[in-house]
Structures are given as structure tokens and as C-alpha cells.
Amino acid sequence: MHGNAGWTIAVMVGLYLLFNIFSILILDHQLEIRLDKQIKHEIDHFLSTFHVQHDSVVITHIREFQEPDLITVSESAFYLQIYDKKGRVLVQSQNLQHFSPIPIRSGPQEEEVRFENLMLDGEVLRVGYQKLYNSDHEFFGYLQLATPKAGAKAISKKLILFNVLTFPFTLLLIIAISVFLAKKSYQPINKIIDLANKISATNLSERLAYEADPNDELGRLRDTLNQLFDRLERQIKQISDFTDNASHQLMSPLTVLNTELELILKQSDKNDKQRPVLEVMHEQTQRMIHIVKTLLVMARVQHSCEDQRRVFNIATVINEDIRKLFRDHRITYEIEKNLHVRGNRDYFSLVVQNLIDNAIKYSDSHAPVLVRAYKDHSMVHLEVEDFGVGISDEEKTMIFERFYRGRASDQYEARGFGLGLSLVYSVVTAMGGKIDVLDNHPRGTRFIISLKALDLS
Image (cartoon, rainbow, N blue to C red; front, side, top):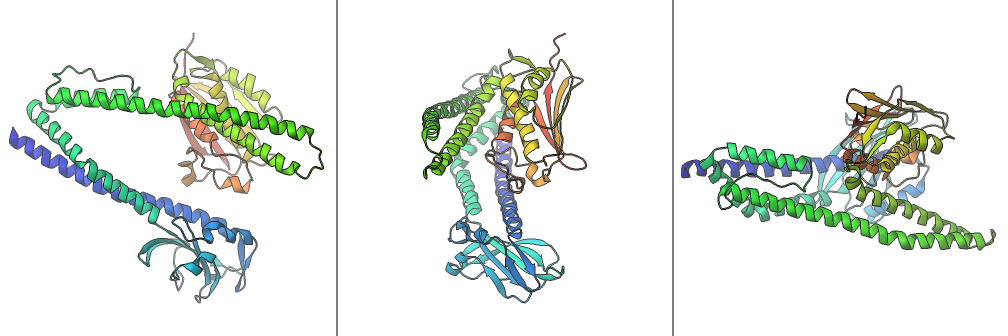
């Protein structure tokens, strides 16, 4: 038994170490990919601020070259150089005056965009090169944009430190599991795994009820996992309560401030020199109120949407709420009747409003928006499709992140906070559904929400 336990411990420790090594390598690779996307995003932004005319660079938006990240030297700084194929630097960011010269690439490269790491003064830089062409479509030179990898390296170091600190506890757990496997075989472990997966797939209020002596390995493992679920449940509740309370505390002063500003604006003269300042303050206060309200909904959405006693008809939501709200817009509705689902009606109305609002914001004024709701076997589907600018494949993985705003927001000057689609995702997943983002044809985007249908017949 001791020999089997020893081999099991050795194998599991080896797998644990390999897993951590690969995790660190994968994390570093993913962070590098994310950094490349950030650099590419900034490069695309700068390409719209100048053009190449014959052998010269003509800057059309000089203010973009005066951003703080191009002036200061920091972990988040960007170092910009534009040079021709002969290596002559024509444009250079101000912060390069306080930093060592970054080597330039000579000779044409095969790729239009290329990324590489450079070691400079003991610091690793991630550098992107974008080919440039003049007005005659001839190769002109490069736009070089570099940024430090210090942030990504810091995350990797933290992960390594965390693994080192937690290794003794992990080793103890591995020994306990290995001894148990040697004594009882793998069947009891599989039962516990199934029970633990059931808890994680439903809710943290349930606990492992596997019959076992609390003094043996199986019982101790059960109790340890139950204690872990207890801690997780308490932590999640504390986070939710904090968000809820913080939002409430913020709403009161913001509401008072908004009311006072409205009163001052009503009483002030239109020619008052202070009025523009007051109008800006009023606008920003309303934006803050909207953000806080959205965060408050997102804090409460999980509990509210999981309430199985709440049932509503999607067709009623669209006909009573959505049609009235967007009656002045060019929207086509194809809605079936009796589309009943479980969840919070008001929150789902916010979901549809956000999707339609995005479709309108990122489409031309004459472009139609189609809203379709129908039942397919045991599922109810809601589709919102537009013929607007569309969403790139790389952005489809990020649009549901909080405060993320896509590239099209600058192109269409769309005002927002990057919370709408995050709220949509939170509500839909809390209702047990899923949301897919597809390309529309010939252009645009299709959002498809799928929820389990409720048969009331």
C-alpha cells in the first residue's frame, strides 16, 4: 500500500509541477497576445492620424501625439517612431527623449504587422512594426510602437510566488488523496467528484452529503470541500452585499447633486458664463447615476433571475415595453406568441433595450434593425440583428467584459460606458441561458439569446 501511495504521490506531484509550468507558459503567451492586440489597436488608431505623401509624413491630428502615454516614461507608456526605409526617423514620441533609443528595423519585412521582444537597458519591450505606404502605394517605411512588458512579467511572478507559497498545502492534499486511493481505490473519489461538480453547477448553498467517517481520508476530504464551499459562499455574499450597499450609498448623494444642478440650471440665465460648466457637471452626474444603477442591477441579477417563481412572456415584454420605447426608430418585429420563460421581467427588458440600443448606435440612420422572437422545440430564441459596422472576431471575445468599448465606438462617436453588454451577459447567464454573437450578412451583427422554454399549456 505504501509503495502504491508513494508512486501515486510522485506522479501527482509531477503532474502538478508540469501543470504549473505549462500554466505559467500559457499565461505568459496569453498576456503577450493581449499586449499585441493592445499595440495593434493603438497602431490602427495612429494610422488614422497621419498619412504619407511622397517622402514625407503629414500629421492630421497632432493632439493624438501629445497623449500622456507618449510623453511620460512608465510601465504603461508607449514609445512611437515613424521612419522611412532608409532608417531616417521622421516622427518620434516625446518620451523617447528620456529613454534609450529603440533600435529600428531596416529592410522590408514580409508581414504587414510584426511583433517581437527587445531587451533594452535591462527592460523587456514588446515592439510592433506596421508597414507604411506612400500615396503611390509604394513601400515607405514603418510605424514602430513599443511598450514595456513589466506588467505582464509582474503577473507571471505573482503566479509563481503564489504557487510556491501554496505548494506545501497542495502537497499535503496530494498525500491525503494518494493514501485514500491506495486504500479504497478510485470509486469513492469519483463519487465525491460527481457531488462536487453538481454543487458547482447549481449553487453553493448545497453541500457534500457523502457517507464517510469524518476521521478517515474520505471524510476529511468531504469536510474540507464543504468548508471551502462555506468560505466561497460567504465571500460571494460579502462581495454582493458590498456592491449593493456601495451603490445605494452612492445613489443618494448623486441624486441630490443632480437635483440641485437641475434647479440651478433652471434658475440661471442662458447667458451666464458659468452655465456651460454647470451643464457639463449635470451631464456627468447623470452618467454616474446611470453607471451606478447598472452596477446595482448587475449585483442583484443573480439572485433575482434565479427565482423560479417568476415567469414572464417575452412577447409581452417586447410588445408593451420595447415597441413604445423605440417607436421612433426603424425596427422590424417578428414576434411569436406565448414565449414563456423563468426569470426577472424587468431585467430581461433591460437586456433587449441594450441590444437594440447598440444595434441603432452602430448602424447608419437609414439601416433597419430586426428583432425576432420564436420557439424552437424546448428553447425560446430572441434575435437582434443589424446591418451596421459589425464586430471583429477578436472583439467578440471581449465585448461582454465590463467597461470594454470596441473600436466602432470611436468611429460612430457612440456614447456609453462599456456596461451594456456586460449586463446583458449577466442577466442571460443568470437565467440559465446563453448568448451567441454572429456576423450578419451582408454586414452587421446578430445577437442570439437562447433560453429554456416554459410550457404553460
